[in-house]
Amino acid sequence: MATLFSSQFEREQEFDPFTDLLFNALLGFVFMFFVAYMLINPQEKTGAIDVKAEMIITLTWPDGLRDDIDLYVEDPAGNVAWYHSKEAGLIHLDRDDRGAYRDTIVVNGKDVANPLNQETVTVRGILAGEYVINVFYFAATSVDPVPLSLKVEKVNPELKVVYYGTLDLDHRGQEKTAVRFTLDEEGQVSNVNKRYKSLTRASRRQRASASSNQ
Image (cartoon, rainbow, N blue to C red; front, side):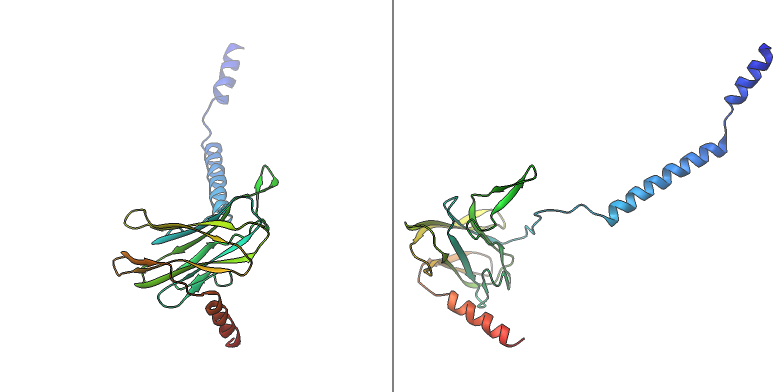
């Protein structure tokens, strides 16, 4: 009896190569399916931006204000980036802030008001010549003048603030030149000034001309 039990036990412990091969094949299939699924359905990169830039231009005004302030930037070739033309030459309007309009973020599945008021433009290449940066008061809700801060940062070869200044806007439709400067072939900034030049009229003429040619 003991011999029979021992014989059955030994048979149960015998190695079955077919079962082992089948199990390994199943594991390989599951792994390949998982990899294929990840390639077909990549995770969405919410909020991803292209960080390549030579200069970053940032306009801010007090948090929580409902006023809509717009940033206009003209390059030496006459290209103007603004909210109706967010890409103009090497200039890109990366953030168009409309005050409180649709200015919310999702936290724990709920919409929360985002108080930050900021517009950002990146210059993604060196084009020698003069750059003009204007601000425009598109929609006014405040009784008092709105204080603005403008910062121009040169990114390469290292981060450096080449201009920082403040100014006010006090009525709807007002446009001011925040700063003008010249950029040479090496990316050096010179001739910084605030001589006024309207960019809203020029940009709207360009848009009307482009529409008529379509």
